[in-house]
Image (cartoon, rainbow, N blue to C red; front, top):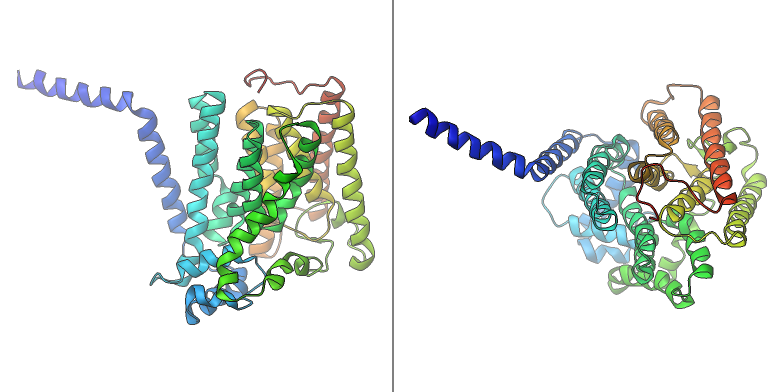
Length: 398
């Protein structure tokens, strides 16, 4: 009887595990993902030493939020406001810098998984996407090891696109404004919003006013602290042309034509605008309604075009591209080879930064990256001729 009673208890336990397996799995993956990041907490990169730690020290020594009146670094105030709030915590400055980025790693994984669950009604895809994002080496290295904040702007940018997929345009433009307030690279997705404005009667020019409004709102604590508005509004303009290199470890087309920055950078910008403008014209001319998978595909192509042809691309500037590719692969199980290749190329660029040399020939990496871009572009063109983007496994129409 005692054995039977014990077996009955064990059966209840195993039944509870089976019935709650998803939640148990998500809890375990979350703990492991955060533990991996914890193991990397002590690494101090060159960027951390040169930029981030001095910024944090200045904030700590000058009253936290009160120090926002000072011109600290070359980032827009919203990120400095986060660092200022963190400066009040009696903790190692390296940890204080990394914690917000790690929390946004979690925010990114949760928010995109919830979207997939709600939009597609597919719990398995949501769980898989959560796992991939939480354990993605590029995300872990960027935030927990490097201490960078790219995940903050990228999270809101990804949500902006996902909101557009749901045709929730007010929220999408609001999210884009938040993303832009954190990083200038959010502008990579602006052409997509412009095309949507032309196509969708639900979007007004007033929606675009949300972009500067959110930037102003998030910069307000710095303005209240005493930093001049003109100084804040000029930050992004001052960043342009600061690094006079055609490419900074991002393996794009300009790796083959480093040339003279002053001579070639205007050409690069004009060419990129012409290329994306041509893509936008094609979408509008062919009356390809940007929604669902078509919107996501076009967004990937636009961001990829910016990374491939604009000057001054750092190795981290493809962060949003890599996230979009991962999401596309999980949702539609297509472009897997391109996604994996692009992520591996970025890992090689990260290695170049940390170790001083890439694992492969940089010329080869640039060629492979260009080949991936051309394949993605060619497939998009082929699909557009049929006015469709075939989905092998996705939910039809989404």
